[in-house]
Length: 264
Image (cartoon, rainbow, N blue to C red; front, side, top):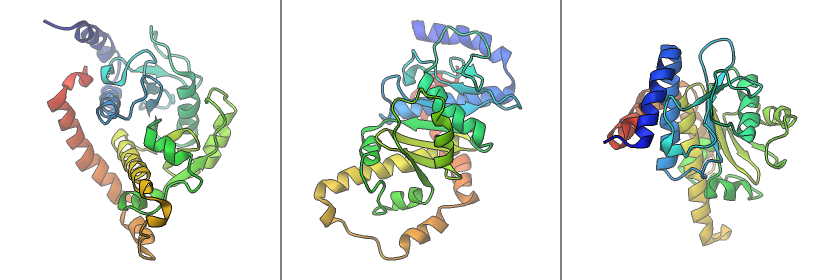
C-alpha cells in the first residue's frame, strides 16, 4: 500500500513532469538526488540549509527546496522554481527560505558558470569556519579543496539583500567558500560537479576537526611544495570529468538502490 508521501509525490509528478522541459526535469532529478545524498551523509540541518540549481534557459530561474520538507522527502517534482527576486514562477503551496534566496540568488546572478549552488551547516564545517586559520593543508582532501576556497565574513542570518554584493565580491572566481562562523558552500557548472566540490570540502573539515583533537603542535606538516602539486593535479577539466562521468553516476546508482523515489 502506498504511503501518503508516495501518493503526494505521484500527484505532483503528474502535474510538474508534464509542465516542464526534459532539460529542466533532468536538473530536477539531479538536484533532488543531491538533497537525498546530503541527508544520507548526515549533512542536513533539519530544514535550514539549501541547495539550488539553475533551470536551463535565459530567464535565470532556479530550483530550491520547499522550506517545509526534510531533505530525505524531496523529490524532483517538489522542488520550487523561483526567479531572482525570490518569487515562485509557478504557483506553489510551499514556502521558500529567504536566507536561501539571498545567498543562492547572488551567486546564480553573478556567475554564469554557477548552475548549482550548495550550502551546508555541518558541525565540522561550522567548526572550521570559526577557526582563525581556516582550512589547513594537512590532508590530501584539504589540499584538493584548499586552492579553490574563498572566505566571507559573518553578517548575521542572510536575509539582507545588500549582503549579496559582498558575497559575490568575496567569492570572486573561486568555486568553494567557507562562510565564517556559519558553514560551507560550493558552486558548479553541474549538480554533480558542485556536489563533489562540497564533498571534498566537508571531508577536509571533518578530518581537520578530528586531527586537531591531538593538538596543533602534534600535526605533521606536508612536505614543501606538495600542496601546490596537488593543486595542479586536482584542477582543470579532469576534475569535472571525474565528477560528471564517474562520481555522480555512481552516486545516482547508490540512491537508486536505496530509494529511487527522488526521481518522482
